[in-house]
Each structure stands twice: as C-alpha cells, then as structure tokens.
Image (cartoon, rainbow, N blue to C red):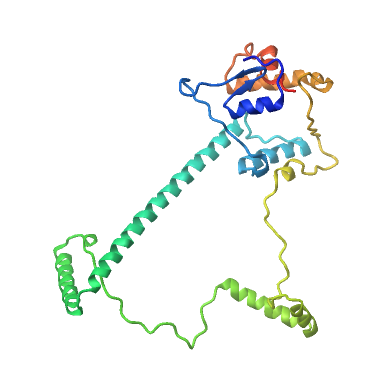
Length: 292
C-alpha cells in the first residue's frame, strides 16, 4: 500500500506483523512464495560492543581528523572485507565449539560405559581378577612379540598403593600466591604497627593490598567516537540530526552531498551504472517518509 500519512504507532503495529517500508511504499513480503525470504537483522544499540574491525575503522577516522592522514593500504571495500572476515571467524568458532561439545559427549559416554563395566567386575572375587590379569599380560606379550599394533590391546591395570602427600613439606602454591605473600610482608615492614591495627580494625582483610584500579576496561562506543582531538586538528567532525520529510533548511543545504554518498554506494557495492541512481530514486527510497 501507499502510505500518504501514518502515525509511528501504526507503523510499529505493521512492523510487528511483518510489514516493511521503503519511503512511502509499505509492503508485506509473502515469505512462503518469494524466491528470497527476508529475515530481520536486529542490533540492540544499548548492548552493542564494537568489534576489532569497528575499532580499526574508528581509529583511521580519528587519525584522519587529527592529522589529515589516510592509510596507504586502505581501499574502498576494506570495511566489507573485514566484516566478512569477522563473520567467517565467528563460523569457525561455532564449528569448533560444536566439535568440542561432541567430543565431550562421546567422552562422557565412554566414561559411563567404563564405570558400568567396573561395577560388574567388582562382583567377581579377587582370584578371578588376578588370573585375568595374568592372562591379559600373557596376551600382550604374545601380541607385542608378533608385531601386532599395540592400540588394539586394552590394558586394565590396578594402581599401586602410594604414600600420599608428604606432610612434612609445605603445600605446593602458585607463583602468584607467593608474590602476593611477599608483597604483604613488604607492606607490613614499611607500615607502622599502629596503621596496620587501625587498617584491620576497620574490617579490611589483612592482605593489605590497595584496591586495584579497574584496568583494561573496554571502551564504550561513545568513548571511541567522541574522543577528544587536539586543538590543531586538521579536520572537524559535526554530527547533526536533521528533518528530511518535510525537508528542513539544513537538509536542503547538504542534499547534494548526501545524494553523492548514496550514488557512490550504489555504484561500488551494487555495481549500478552512473545514470541509474537518480535523485528521485534517492528521495523516494531514503528521504520521503509518511511518518508523523
């Protein structure tokens, strides 16, 4: 249908029922009949985390704004290639995850089978077990002597009784814990006894570590975009939200620049000839809106 005028809530109700809009043209794809089914791609802006590719592009942009420099190796379709690389890497990660899950499943099945067989063997007397072990060892010697592959032989040996942990020695500790202990002793030597007592009396643990500043925190999208530039920056970037329908004075002033961006996009990405992306097509597709 052609929407001459529509409230935002009405359009939201249509979206929830599978409708979409291109300019003032509102349509609903017939998913079971069309050759190219359409799927909604949703980005939750509040939960969005920029990827390495996004950060790389933002750094290039900031470098251009600050110094006016453009990387030599940059090309027109580089962001598309990096996005594709991220998608492929994500697919491989998913495949590896599925492989690990399959391995764990087969491992758990093998363990279950071995436990069941062990429980059955417990019912037998010890004499039979000893005789079985002797027979198995003889079989192994014969097979090894005959040159048969060793992986076909299953050996079930009983572990020898050990002495256990040596209680006279201190328990084994990680190097990180040892470093913490050294730091604690060093702080105890540096600080007077009165300060230490007051520190512990306030409910602090005797570890005496000052609270660590949260380092390596990922930068938010706002931090990356609105990073402060030097006063002597080569360029200045301003982001403005302007009304396109009905067109405001600011939108009219920059209309030709916006159209050239659209035209270049259509030619580079969709391989359109220069005369195909017209001004009327751009206006009808991206500027005109029936929403009030």
